[in-house]
Amino acid sequence: MGEKKRKDAAKPMFVFGKKNYKFMFIGLACIALGFILMAGGGSDDPNVFNPEIFSWRRIRLAPTLVLIGFGIQIYAILLNPDKK
Image 1: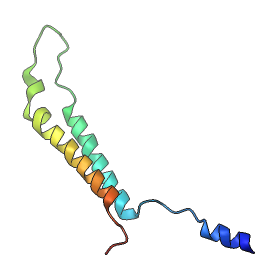
Image 2 (image 1 turned 180 degrees about the vertical axis):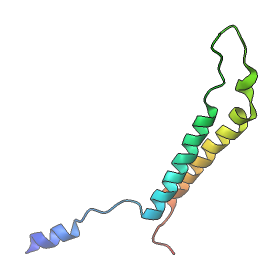
Image 3 (image 1 turned 90 degrees about the vertical axis):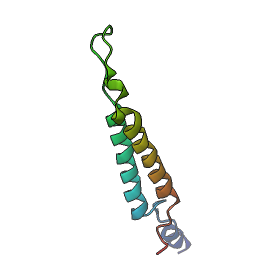
């Protein structure tokens, strides 16, 4: 009889709630989008300089998106899903 109670008490539970996971996926999407926006801009010929690597998108927008994504991740970890 005691073993049945112990099995019921040891039910597996998730560390985070549904709300936490939603914010985690949103943060992960922001981080991925930031890295995608940073990609490219190189030149096939190493002797030719391509000024596209210094575009506003790669220097300002993409790193900002990555930092926002990390901020959302921290918020998702610290969020209490039971609080209403």
